[in-house]
Image (cartoon, rainbow, N blue to C red):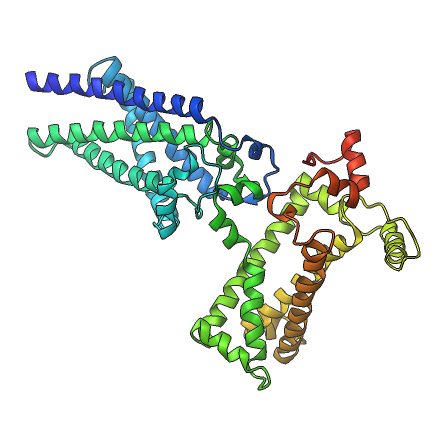
Length: 447
């Protein structure tokens, strides 16, 4: 029929123009603004962003979609005829994989892609893609990724339903034709969206594509691209302190301010829930760190560097003499100083005690059977005392050495971006600098 041939010609023109427009826009953007922060691609990836299951779902969905797109558009645009033969067989096999993958993606990431108020701020700044170096607010997924997520869910649902109508022709010819048009146009828009998505995940943001392969990003990458998500990942210890201290003081009359903190949260039940949530996060982070330390080469290397040595004892003596004015020369430190090693091993010891006693308090019945000698009262006292010790160590020892030391005040940003200045490494870690210069040290370089 004439109008069907006309619709086919229009679709072929729209397809070519639409895909060419997206490719041209990507090329134009790259030439005008270039890649965003290419230096982030060289950082060591130490923060897990996607699990193995998430990466598998993503890979299966995108590969099945590309199979559907190639077979469908080869028939429609190049061969100019309906799907048939081996193209139809491949198309038919890939379709259910895409449908299942899309459903899995919807279930897994719908909560993370819920629109928040800060996403509008991201949209107003166009995500910083128009030449701005300013970091824009973003959770686990930024505003653009959330928009892409809901677009592929909607377009994917239309393509799946219209495809089913085409496969099982129980409706009238008019309904079949409408379904056919809906199917190919929804697929066309999906292809255009995926092309833009691939560009933004590769050339526009160098190194980003690796996250979907390895599942890991660098801390500096996370802080730059998804600062809100990073802050939430980093807040478990602080959350335990904020919620735990009032719980400890609640039964002591002299600490009436704890009642005010509990009132701020709403009730004692809420503050306990928040405290336990932060505890679970701490457990997960600790398990991840152990796995990273023993299973990853870089983790094992860092662990070896953090082991106490006889030189650390000598460094304590030399540093004490320096501070007392009895020596003019400070000790020469390597990658980690003795007080940084103390910080690290204090966390190890503290996590063992806090997690062990915390689980005993949370599940007293189970603990009584597994470790009957560890009574509830003993766990409560040890948990509270260790928590106070850990809080003081964090707020006094760690914060002084990292932020309030006169040579660093008002604080170093090394913990934020992972890099150290040339002057700082020469002053605080001269032996590490000598290793770097000689080519025998770590891959990280000073600014």
